[in-house]
Image (cartoon, rainbow over all chains, first blue to last red; front, side, top):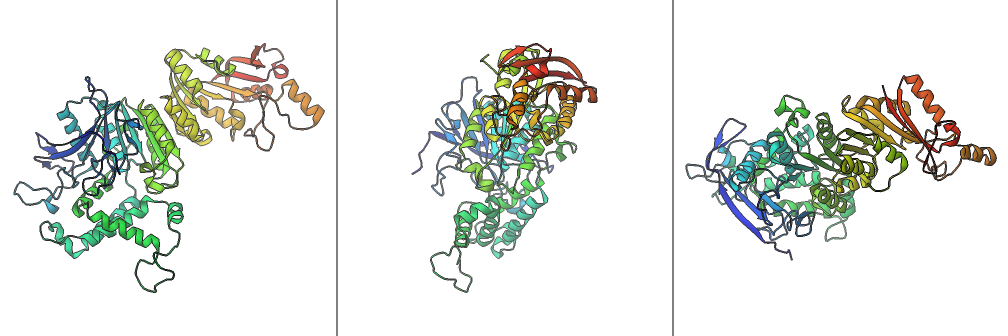
Length: 367
Length: 196
């Protein structure tokens, strides 16, 4: 049973239109967020946590739909590496998502869901919404911005675009730009969704049927990229599921098939297919160097924040070389940076799992 | 400042307040912490062992996990006032290239290393005919990290060959400073302050 922290769930309607990288602006943007721990009188103890692709604001408390513990409940809480007894932790749902912040399932000004009329957003657009939230909360400068995977991209984008507004930047298992391989995997997922007849050009809201099969396949493909071969072999090998011999058919004979099917189907209960399209697009467009004249170091030239990067030796989605690339750029502008490649068997997902060394690095860096 | 190894103590004593320092092979960050806390030095570290980087980060120090043999090349020219290589030269793949990199990324460099020509070493080799194992070189030949043993005379010759200037040098035996006369016989280890 998940423990429940004292938290505040709230929703903010941005007072002004949110300008987007696409040139459009989004009116009446809602940002749903949770907070944990007391905000100090000088507002100097706030930590913004940025979530990954299919994450949400429920970082430390049970998810309202699945009832499962928050996605980083092992890291965020009283006495934990991100100590809610000391820090005021804020976690917001990114725009484009489907857990309360404005996204493709939200109602457009004509009272119909946006669907594919929702503008294409970027990681920087997500960060702009986070900063607008900080403005509304009256928080001028964060103690730290923290994120893993897509959350790490937001943390880096925050540093590049709003570097004066945080003292520390902690980016875990992430990259400064999406590689061709990353884009390729995302495209498989998007095509699976769009090939589902129930997708209906994205206008499936209220039709009683949605592209669940396509979304499940997208999730299955993505899920493989989050794990390591050794992790999969350890967990499943070639073991059969609930049977003694092969069926010579296309049931889920192997445990790994059954596991992926479960992951895919359970995902459709909590995530909107169009949000998946928009957020993966935002990640694919992410190229921090490109935004700063082609030189990554220039992205970090105007921040005085301290940086810490963590990679995992079994992460092949955002391998250590991607983190080193960022470290070199930070060195080139003489930014104070720490970097460590940790050994863990779980692949990209290691940042969400039990890696005590990660706990110690996070705790040490935030001190 | 807590009690440090005498070579580190000597290095720390010669680094001015507010300097920018790269400690190559920074270990658990003892020297970096002393420099930061004692004299407000902006110290960065490079270290091969993730466990030691973790210790540095937990002390609030900036340390990067990496291999100095390769990663020093990634730092810009003159990025630091001082580059420090303590008790690591003899473990590097190419000590001569390491020296070049140190004096490229740092305006000056401190290098400390054990002296293989120390008289006890010579005697041990002469008498036993086997690679010496001493308090400063405590590991057998087959498991030591030291792949390029050197002497003070070797190092001086390398400096001459490369045209590197010696700003200062200090010698130690049994953790006590000894004079420079006959150091190649009497010193267990040495610290050099170098510049181009």
